[in-house]
Image (tube, rainbow, N blue to C red):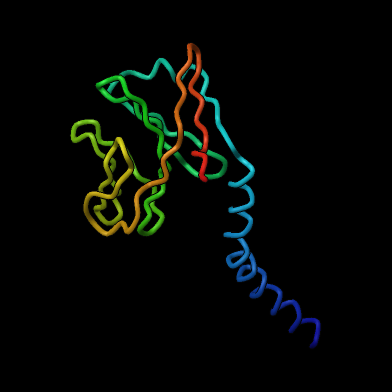
Length: 137
């Protein structure tokens, strides 16, 4: 009887443990990634975007019509949905709750997002694009 109770407790407790522990693991994994190189991303047409992984998180690289480049975290700061670039409106949109962000700065424009998207540093070279974390302090 005690073994069955222990197995039952483990079956319930382990998913709760994983749920509560996962933000710590994600933070550690994210901190380990300092940069990402995207081969041939320098060929991305103006007015388009490329989704990629920065560590374990989705991110977006945008090549604007004015030939500027921007890379932002692609997770909405409201509820964690993945955002997408809308080239016709030149903004980033979260389909979950209608939040919008400025496609050049990542600043929240409208809707429920409480904070801007994290912005990365972009270095375009022939044959690749290097995305790095912004240096603080």
